[in-house]
Amino acid sequence: MSERSEGAPGTRLTPYWELLKAQVRGQASYRASFWLDMVGNFALLGGDLLTVIVLFQVTPSLGGFTRPQVLVMFALGMVAFNVADLAVGNIERIRMYVRTGTLDTVLIRPLGVLSQLLALDFGVRRIGRVLYAVTILVVALVLADVAWTPAKAVLVVVAPIAGAALFGSIFVAASAVAFWWIESGEIAATVTYGGRDFSTYPITVYGQLFRRVFAYGLGFGFVAYYPALVLLELPDPLGLPELTGWASPLVALVAVGLAALVWRTGVRHYRSTGS
Amino acid sequence: MFGFLRSYVMIAVTVVGGAAAGYSEAQLLSFVWLGQGLLGVLLLWGWNDLADRIRSGDVVMDLLRPQHPVVYFLAADLGRAAYAFLTRFFAPMLVGALCFTLYVPQRWPTYPLGAASIVLGVVISFGCRYLVNAASFWLMDSRGVNLVWLVCSGLLAGLYFPLRFLPEPLLLLIWIGTPMPSMLQAPLDVLVERDGLTGQLAIVGGQIAWAAALIGLCFLVQRRAERKLVVQGG
Image (cartoon, rainbow over all chains, first blue to last red; front, side):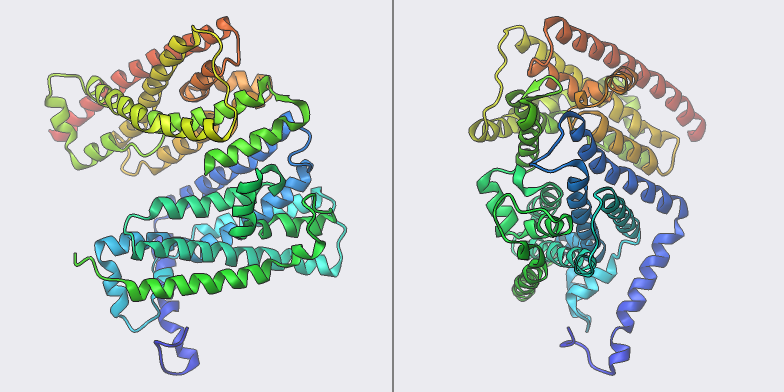
């Protein structure tokens, strides 16, 4: 991360910090807008939660799991996704920067490209979504009557962080496609938001090929499903050992590495649109 | 992608009982893929034409035309919907039919009724969008109205889950009290033959009532807005 900046370690982050502060100040200054957005985000998230609850109106189990159990998976996926969205979600705007040429301004500054882009559009409102998702997780864990052990307590913190890192990698890698192909929004959105929806249901409901691609190929099965099985002390109907629930940090690490590679290749590959 | 996700969830819902809320598995799958196909036709989101013209002042040009603005915009929207039907409706249906066993309507009256229901759905969707956009005549920042529309249209139109999954009293309240189910849920229910012929006719009848009420309201709002514009313009 430090290849572009010199100076004392303490001062290295100062420019990013200032960028972030300016963003927060700017977004909070339109108060009515800010609160309206908060409320709207809650309602939109509520829609997803409501869907899960309504589905259980017509069936006692989904993919072999009860409502509280599915809610734990749902909530783990939600926390992971929203943390990632808060941290790197605005990377989606890169295709706009590429198209309008704004990226050139970012590139000539003596700061990291990725970190600049993230600080440029930090979405304060997204904090609300993270808090909301965490609340759902707490409620779901209480409803599911989890028998707590120290190991599970660690897992319930580690899994969403690892999941967020995985989602973040997908965000970055999918957005980096914009370096090659300017109109890449649809693909990026399908993978990221599709991944979110995928990971909020037990992976046992999906068809085999579909599950293989998204749960194991892209790693979304490790975000919520397998950690939830460990928390709930349930055996995997698909036959993988309990240890799989602990694999998410490893999966995340691989994903972050791959995403970094794609990103760097993309930046090096970038030619200005000239506009 | 989202069609697949919803399909698998719907299959999972019917695994235990074989059916859910009166739909068979094939009917639910048709519901999902028809919904994907109709989404672009109904255009629930992303229509700001009128609001943009109000903001820029171009709306004055619309008032100078010999046609009434509501008629003019409605005609344009029906044309857009027809084009979207040709280009965006059949691809999802094909994918759905190739990957899953979809339900095919068994009774011939379903076809004309379904077509009428889709057209009415477009008119109702247009009416709602027009009203949401027209809020810009009064409000500088219409984001709140837009947000309410976004939340309601997704949730109450039957896109996230078939509304029939809801408890009966709540369902009736939403269906009769709001136009949202008449946009998407109604044509989908007609097309998958969730109800008998009388049920289908009742659904389409409800759509006609909502379409008439909304277009009437559009005319009313437009008249009030024009009066306000004159005052503002001096």
